[in-house]
Image (tube, rainbow, N blue to C red; front, side, top):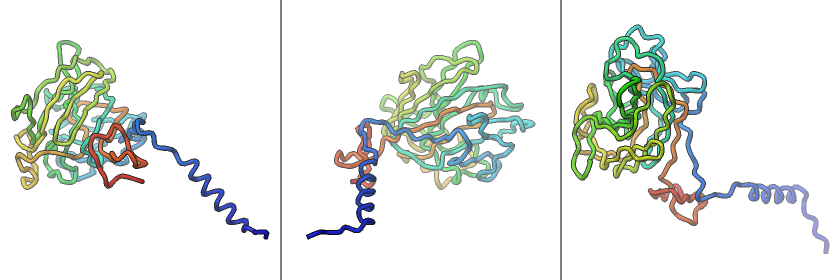
Length: 288
């Protein structure tokens, strides 16, 4: 008995099998880095500048020039404590952050002396929209980026704590800033910085493959921040996740890469999206 299979069914079966065959197979050890900065524009980022409403990019403080995200002060007459921050619009908890940065040019007139060649990575931060109109810094853990003056020593990847505290050597650490053990980077050279963030457990500052500072249990507390909504500053609350922000503190700074390796995901080896490098399980994200 002869069976005639409709031609459209043959094509349907063929393309279904072809689609299955061409789907990329998961490689558990292949790292999947997320590019937070697309090197084209500020898509995915929110801006909050002191004294200005959310996403009012006063004087084009933050802009993309020649594929570089730049904190820029060409249109400023004077700084006037107009501290600014640009926030990636998605929070993270467990991750490895990598950025390449450099300081350029001269500090804007009126910038504080301590802000010379000074910027920062604000981690586990409150959101941009939760900041007060005149708030100076977000409540966050700051990985301080510093450049040398051409002489003397000045470490980078230090720790500062606007509205936060951490634990060091098993004890609550309350001073606002502490230096890392990094070397000094003078001039306009590019520096590659990494930060390992493990929720509310631990954080490590890494440069050139070496850990130059580490601490545990990041939490809300302390001072060194003003203009915030008091209802969100609940001292002693552990910071297990938050936003990532870059600063504008009066010295022009450029970033040519900002990328993140998410360490939270599906840890079920039977799942299609299992990765060996995950350290925090998110069962809801598993795909079978």
